[in-house]
Length: 328
Image 1 (cartoon, rainbow, N blue to C red):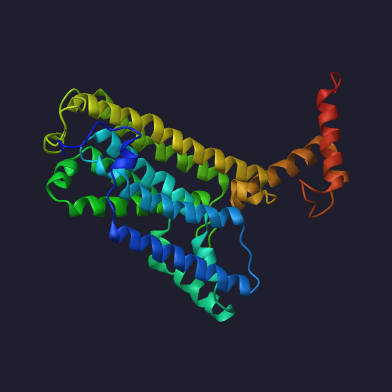
Image 2 (image 1 turned 120 degrees about the horizontal axis):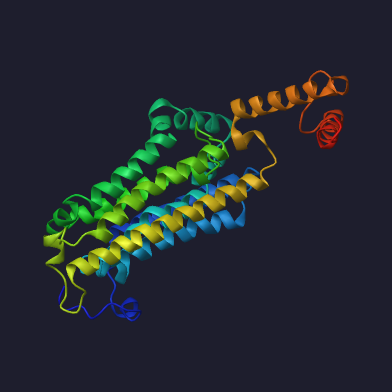
């Protein structure tokens, strides 16, 4: 690794690392996605152009990340390795999820094929794998297990572990973000409020790992740092820069996911997907009780919708008027 020149923008021009395996995976993903998309369109299915572009961009970014100077310098500079981690576990999976590959695959089949597809996707093993808690646990385990253990040193001694790590990062990120950003035909469709809670919880591993690395004054990965070029920062400085990236950029990317969820929540016309069926029912019941107790029972018909019924809205406005009246 000592023959590498200092890392910079020119490194992307002069250094590359063609990965035939990952390139083959990228080609299979693109060809399979476009073929399924074509079959679905012939059956009358429709998918937004931006979703198609998102999936293709995710595949291109995946192959580019593991084939570019980022991967070449990943074992020479820990902070570059951290950038590769964040791209593979956050950015690439987000683009893939937004492309709705499962929906595209489902739409490529006829009605009987879609029924079989639904049966498989909603089956016990697949449902367990796509459960939000499983995705969150796997994400936390991967982030902590690869940064706060001796995994990096093992990877420095066994090259195949780096490929396994890259694949694990993409899979863990995809399973985490699938129920957060996707509207796919899986068993779980969690409301927006729990999604936001999951995002906040998912920020904890990034923060913990970032702070531990940022505050460490010891060389945590001696085997990996033994591969440092002479021009690289010291092992401790490199480690602290990587920790800062994990904390700031990792949490920043997670916040962007949260912003996307909030935007989706605001633009979603179905109120029940915000709180969930049980909480939404409780909200409506509490609203109706307040209106009745405020004297609006004569205006509320049986089965009235507390959000859309005009009589209920009139009762609600009357209640507010009485509450604002000092003599009431």
